[in-house]
Length: 520
Length: 58
Image (tube, rainbow over all chains, first blue to last red; front, side):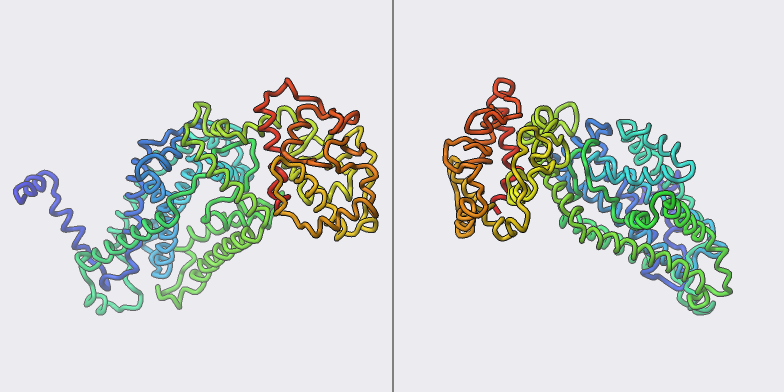
């Protein structure tokens, strides 16, 4: 073994390189706060390795992307786990990047002579977010598709953003070129850029060394200084192991990454960006229309300018935290703003019933589409899995044959009654209260003779009784009646009202086999 | 109103709403008997019925 190392060393100088790396001095000694850079490097390498493994199955096209991702998720042994690690790895990278930035700011490590290190770090932070954004679209599922549209839509609203959006999307609308461009960015442009910046960052770091703690004087620093090996290396490796363990735990706990139904441009989806962009999404809510430039350009631009200019903003004589109030206050304000906006976005969504209902629908569709994908995804692409679903086939039949006159879920005509929630309690209450509304018979030509029953004619409690009776009568006419779901006492009251005070029986028969719809 | 809104009733309406026990002379909806197969009519009736059934059963 020693002879082999000698052979390699003679040709590469590896011993000297290793020695230089391990003996790098750490002024003030090893500290936990120095681990973030190493953890980020570990995460980057891990993401690259996982990305390569996923790329062996993934197919970047609008027709194949969802199907290949579903295949990785549900069919490849351990595929869900690798995809989950890659997905959560991006979130963990964002968190560790922020922690690293906080540590650098608190230590004053952006100050002379480390300005370029700070700037390359900021650029790498931007690239981490760009990785997350481009990767989010690649499964070509509903969530990624619509969330990324929000992001590229924001891009299009900034000055000169429209041509940039056009280039990134590969046209005016999302399509096959969008996915190939995002894929090229995600697996070629961004890794190469991050790799180059990381090399420069590490070179600059080695050139200037670790920023020593401001609390120690020269002689204390000299006394406490240690080589990188073994203490700091041990802390770095331990931190990487803990980060890896957190990632594995997150992945198991969530059973990997979500995969929603295939992207459908014709659908309505409750689009939300991933959590690390929620602050921007929330900010946009406060600046609508022409004012949106404040949220898309002015505020983010001011924040970026402040961060890049931080080495010049901070002119304090000392790196001690207490003497750098303005610089630290500015960074703190940005952090608090991001946290508060993110929290507001999460709370508003949690309280938004429409959003929650839409999310529940999306999760149901996701589960169903993946069940259907297990049977096979047709060559037309992900959305074609719905062709294997009888319900979807019925929806298509409805669209082709019925929707000119009838509406369901907000789509369709008004020439005949709406069939959304057809014949449920609310629908029946509505038809009694306002039969000539377009939701009921208002759009018809021959069903205009029923008059409305107002709350004066028929108070709400009586209406409930009549509706219960109508439902009972309906159920009694079913092939296998099941009356257990109905309030029989209430229906009894409805029956009395039906025949007497309300006089529904004047027009409607309730007898089996008799003429219907107002005919006796 | 007997059985009105049941799956079988919806299926009959789709087939031919002008039957006397349905809408009779007031029928405006075209008959789909012959235009759609039995399976298609059944699938469509299921779909329309399920629009209201979850709430109606609550």
